[in-house]
Length: 373
Image 1 (cartoon, one colour):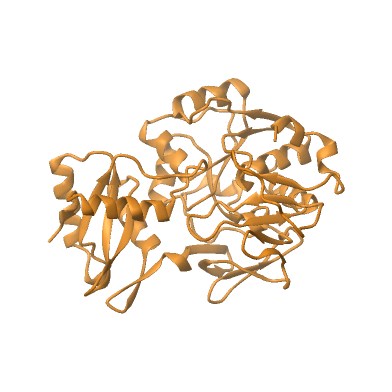
Image 2 (spheres, one colour; image 1 turned 90 degrees about the vertical axis):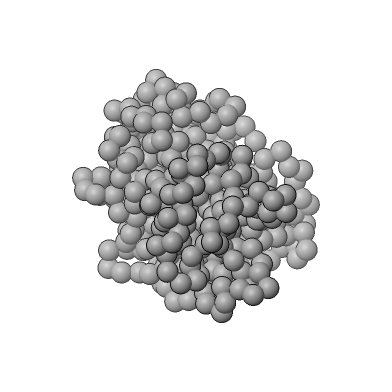
């Protein structure tokens, strides 16, 4: 669907019909699903494909809450640097429509941090959503933010404290956020006032339209919640409860929400649960670079941990990795590492975990695994 169509008032009328949003994909039958919903293909890194059905009203409620939180005015300009068929990019369009403000779309075929910053400057973009990989590319190239930017919401994954600090040092007004397709985009986002202090991806303020509670996982309730799921195997399944249980782990304090990883990123090593996401954060903080931890089945340990880096590494860099691993105690210590020429990602630049595991296994089979002990 064209972006121009989504920005028109007729699109947002509740009876405008069912819409399926996905990249280069034949729409499923969506048999039995309500005719008034928008459907987004899930952008998660694992699990069976399914589509999230959500109302236009819910998306506009989310947009209004985000616009108010970020002080978006009619004179503001939302910039789109994400695919609009995922809820993160679609949310930008909803916010531009809801605020009746200017809008600009990055139209290059491929993400290029240098071209992107030129576009931001020329279009005088004030508000923007990015994923952590895009922030990493801007920072690693030492690109300074244009003065027109007032807020950069970072979603689709957690932006580490170290990378956030480096981004702010270059003038990028990055704000940590937490959201999901089922919530129509953002659930919690740092305030503009936080830009005056140190970047800390903890205790993120929950937006007023959401009630959040934390038990075994993060649960939420609110008017912007999705209506249900459609899948090839089960067809249409309407959400039955007011509260929605996510797959995310976290803690809730007076200052807000802290994200602590995902249930599906917990792995057992010799009977002990290890958080892959926390271990990855530990390595990224040390090397100020993106890297991943992949669990590989092991007859003795249940799983052994393999570090994955993108691109070639010099001998000295490999030695640094080995030295750092020696400092890690217990079962969290990785056993080996591999180097992949390219990490499998979605159009949202989100790492595809299942494909990553398969790539690592292929690398190990071909004898390209570097053992650490």
